[in-house]
Image 1 (tube, rainbow, N blue to C red):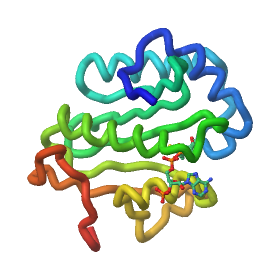
Image 2 (image 1 turned 120 degrees about the vertical axis):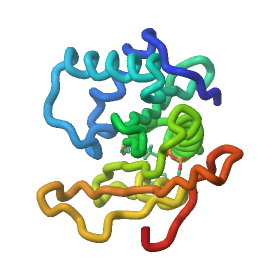
Image 3 (image 1 turned 90 degrees about the vertical axis):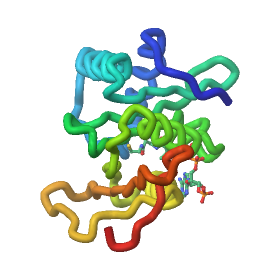
Image 4 (image 1 turned 45 degrees about the horizontal axis):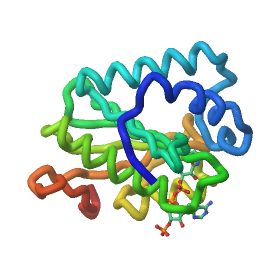
Length: 172
Ligand SMILES: CC(C)(COP(=O)(O)OP(=O)(O)OC[C@H]1O[C@@H](n2cnc3c(N)ncnc32)[C@H](O)[C@@H]1OP(=O)(O)O)[C@@H](O)C(=O)NCCC(=O)NCCS
């Protein structure tokens, strides 16, 4: 398994991944056409180039099987993460490796980073377990309008360098 920066050539397999029902049942998006997915991909690549985001891919035997994205807010004190793994390659540690890398790289490009947010379907056991294992907490008061999607957050203590280790801060 190799984690690397995403590049233009990743668009193809990412479009295929996002077209699969097994993957998409947990994703909060409406029926979108390929063009809007491609536009989103270009936006994430551009954010990475401008150091306003991180966009990485895991290759298994040279083929992309998972991706992770972190986008910094305009002020740089918060970020949003998104990640996904080819269903045939899930539960092998790829999601964890991706999340670790985007958090690490996010702290590097965003020295003011304090809070990392994620959105996850309330029944998405794999995502919930992964977020919890990295110290994310679900919001105490769920946004009723967003259900069945729940917001999760991680408080980042940037003082804890090296690696800007994300950690739990109870009650934050
Ligand atoms: C969420 C997702 C990225 C996890 O990827 P993964 O490669 O399977 O994750 P890992 O193998 O690193 O596992 C991470 C943890 O989650 C657990 N896990 C993963 N899938 C699970 C499942 N279906 N049920 C229960 N636990 C699960 C693993 O056991 C592991 O827990 P542990 O560290 O306590 O052992 C993957 O399921 C996925 O792509 N889902 C669809 C897209 C999605 O939901 N994205 C998140 C929203 S942004």
